[in-house]
Length: 313
Image (cartoon, rainbow, N blue to C red; front, side):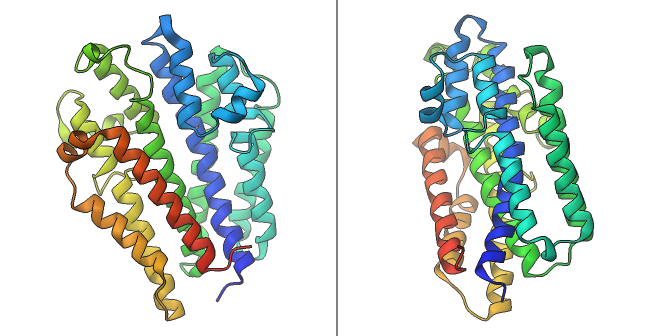
């Protein structure tokens, strides 16, 4: 059995890698949606701050929400522990701590990403450069993930890493979806209009699901179908369902390896069952925002249970 400190380092290394990528995706969602609401851009950027979970810290440093202040705080502010720069620093720090548990290639990919992102975010980013920077951040995270998958043994080291990845990814997919319903629509009369549909399309593009959505649904952008895709579709790699299939699977491997089942396994099974037994129509009927905030709270609970079960330091 891995030492708790090693398991924690692997778990958090991958949570921070995923967080860096997903913060870039949240900024991307805001950037795309701001284009549809140029007259009320501050409300759009405020929603990005709120759904990233960093509103309190942001308000201590900034009085207004603009593309410049929000993107700077979320991408490169060292005082924001969830910024891309802070996250990649934390990922590398955890990787150094568990370096002997990583292949040489996995360590080098993380170290290289750290150097590239530090260089890219060394100075404030001009608005015209923001799309290119966001693509580069996502590319570095993808290179780490590809190297890890291509070189690591499928053992408990791999399991803790995957669990960290998918708990973080589920949290962030839920938050990106919630951007849609937090201060974005100017009035209820806009629901179902071209503006509403464009915002949903922007969410798909921000999670690189624009083309694959059309493969599955082969229809115009509809909120019900897009929510179904990102919440319930078991083949979409950023959906909540897909994330929990993998969390349950890797927690199951740990239970079999260690010969004992813990409450965290049951919590994960319960959440997966909720997703599998649900329909998007029931989710909308009960309120999408309410469903997503409840899911985020349950996902956080699972993270705490895993840390307690496996003695994370």
